[in-house]
Image 1 (cartoon, rainbow, N blue to C red):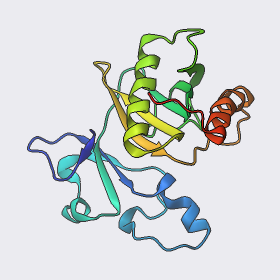
Image 2: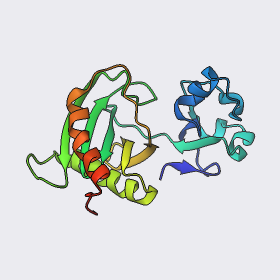
Image 3: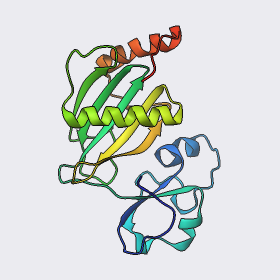
Image 4: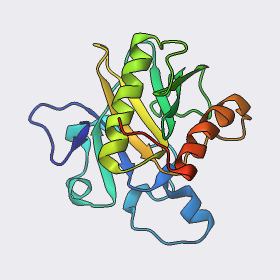
Length: 193
């Protein structure tokens, strides 16, 4: 896991996020108060050394402090799942926040437990496997999971989205692929992993 509950003995880079989606921006627009202290409405979460995190932040239940994971290629993954259907989006973004809204590049690959039409490259297959484990543990049969990769190739699930959003970009092929999984969910045919 990347979550930290207290400062590590040796200072490391950390990212400090709110426990609200996208920094609570939607809540602010809707005038819904939330207790995110110093990070209220902050779209760009700070990446700092763990020794520079104020003591109050470590005890603040509205904040999530995580090890900051990065790799030289700035690669990250978003895996969309709907029952047995999955789409893994591999992308790169040099900023500290890995968001699908503004990647330097993005490739979508399609997967399904029901068929083995085209096997995924190894790291994308591992991202789908990690996502399926996280989805099962969290009881999510439709959603999107964000994963980051460290320099050694270890994948970390850093976010689970029960209501995935991919911005204004039209992704018809993604929607069509996931529609098969949604049909399984509606008809109750989803098979266990």
